[in-house]
Image 1 (cartoon, helix red, strand yellow):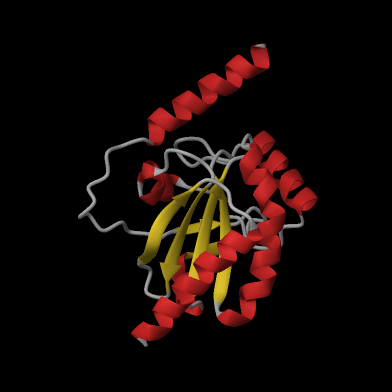
Image 2 (cartoon, one colour):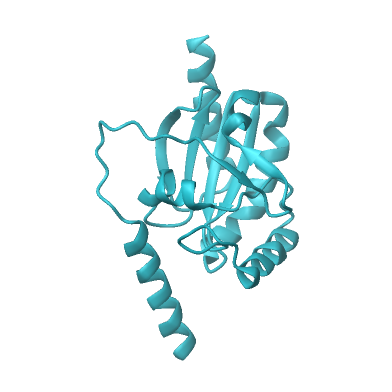
Length: 180
C-alpha cells in the first residue's frame, strides 16, 4: 500500500511538473545535446542521419513501457536499413534540473538489459525537460522526427505492438519518400 501511494504521488507530481497547455500552432523544437546512459555524447544531429527518428519516452515505473521495449528492439533492427532509428528517453533517470539519479539509472540499465534493447537511450537534461519534454503528460509517448528535425505524424501516447508500430513507420516512410 505504501509503495502504491508513493508511486501514485510520484506520477502525479511528475505529470503536474510536465503538463502544460500546448499551443497547437506553436512549432516544437526537438533540438538537444545530452549523453546516453553509457555517458556518450548524443545530440539532435542524429536526426539528419536518418529518414525518420522515433523518440520513445518511457519510465522505469511504467509497465506498458517496459512490455513494449522488446518489440521496439526488434522494430529497431528490422528498420535500420530503411533509414529509421529509435532512441529512448527514460524520463525518470534525472531530476527536474537534469541531474542524473543513480538509482533510477541503475533501474533503467537493468530494464534495457532484460528487454534486449540495443538502441540508444538518452538522459533527459534541463534543456530537454524545459523544452520538448515539458509537454509529455503520459508514458510511453512516441514522437517521429524527420531528417530536418521536424515532427512528422502525430504524437503517439500508449504502447503498441511491433506490428502496429511497423504500420505507422511504413506510412511515415511513404509520406517522406513522396516529399523527396
